[in-house]
Length: 83
Image 1 (cartoon, helix red, strand yellow):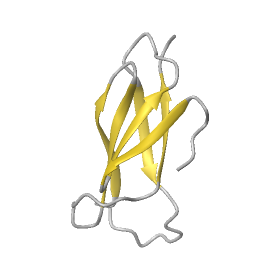
Image 2 (cartoon, rainbow, N blue to C red; image 1 turned 135 degrees about the vertical axis):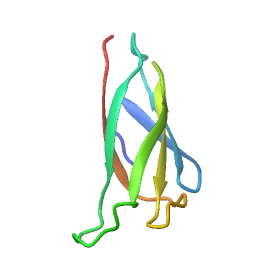
Image 3 (cartoon, one colour; image 1 turned 90 degrees about the horizontal axis):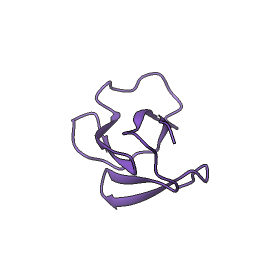
Image 4 (cartoon, helix red, strand yellow; image 1 turned 30 degrees about the vertical axis):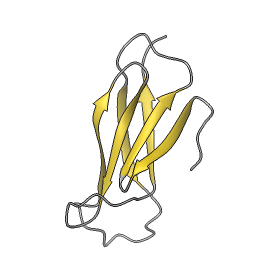
């Protein structure tokens, strides 16, 4: 896992990651993301990343496979907020 220095990412379990802000924001983060590193255009649209929880300190990311099951997958994200 790598990060920009503004955030750190920790794998909590299969398909579940905690994203932490190194410096808290004043508001709940707006966050978007995508799974990455597949290298082909024949991916199932169920292969994805979702962010069910977001707050001033970070977010939870869940990644899944083409059957909708949690599966650890590479992903990238962008988060914005005010400080």
